[in-house]
Length: 389
Image (cartoon, rainbow, N blue to C red):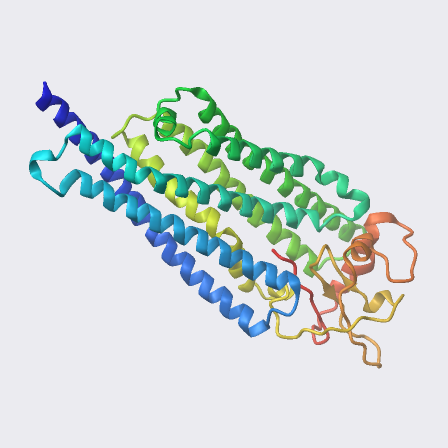
């Protein structure tokens, strides 16, 4: 009987090692990609400079996510080493002993806690990025539309912290694997679901702004695609991609909880979890690199070499920057005099007003006053002020 129990224990340890090795390999490859993207994005920032606070926020966010994911990978590798040590190294006579396995669990559990905290922080940062991008697209009069995604975001944070609070001990964490008690499992499931819905709602609000802009362009009979439309498209696309990542995380977590150790679902869920975790951490940096590959989008996000720090004359809408949030697009000069441009304030640009002009048409004047400028093809005098994402 003792030999049979020892064999079963060794088999379970082998299954876990297989899954963890596969996960570490996948996460290491993804980390290499992340590191490359971070170096490239850092080079972009160094060339353009960190003169504006949105640029600094973007860079710091990318740096923090890289550091967090570095900690996640290091703790994962150390935990794998300790697992291998417990299973294969040491006195052959003690390999497979229950006492040795329990001792290795006590060593590995603090690393598991670190991984869980880092994972939650990465989700909070990426969710916050999506919330902020939607937030800056709405003027103060319409900020109430952000109430739902902000409430969902806060709910996601609360349930995530509640989940972490329920697994502070090793017995509680091991019980989570069998869903007994059910509270930790329900909390983490609610956290993932709220995170997913948060991003869906925020992305839908951005898509609404894109729809309203395209509808206005149709009324104005503007056939060309405006620079502002490019920005909104990239926001919707990147937000949709992140929604897919969140959905994958939620589905694979449920599959992992229901799949038996050693089953195909077990291995697939471990590998996909590593991929989803890496994708969540890379999200802010990937967006930076993606927009840098599109020339007009690059200009819209401020990754352009022609930056100017002056403000246009008050009341001159033709020279006023068009700014959905902090993303600004100033029309090039069309008169004989030289005009130095700078983006207007957030509230002013979203309401479609110049510094002195009234707002006759409400929020729609944002597009009327600013997006008509997109038909002018010259970009010699264009100045942009960055948005964080």
